[in-house]
Image (cartoon, rainbow, N blue to C red):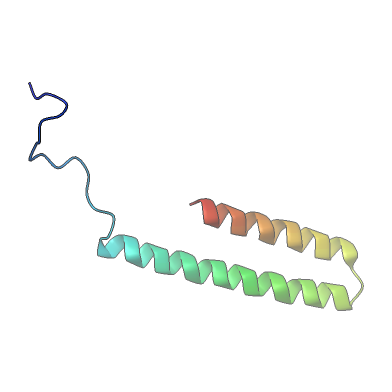
Amino acid sequence: MAAVNESSHLVLARPSSTTESRFAHIIMAVAVAVVLIGAIVGIVIAATTGQSETVLGIALIGGGLLCAAALC
C-alpha cells in the first residue's frame, strides 16, 4: 500500500491536450460564432420591423445558448 506522500509511476488521468479535444473546441467555437451572428442578424431584422417581443425572445434564447456554451 502506497503512502500519500510517496511518488508513484501510475497515471490516473489522460492529458486534455489530445487532438480530439482540440477538434471539439474548434467545433464549439464555430457553433458559438454561428449562434452569435444569427442572434445579431435576427435582432436587427426584428427591430427594424418593430417586433419588440421577438427581439426580446431572440436575445434571451441567444444569450442562454451562449452562456450554456461557455459553461461546457
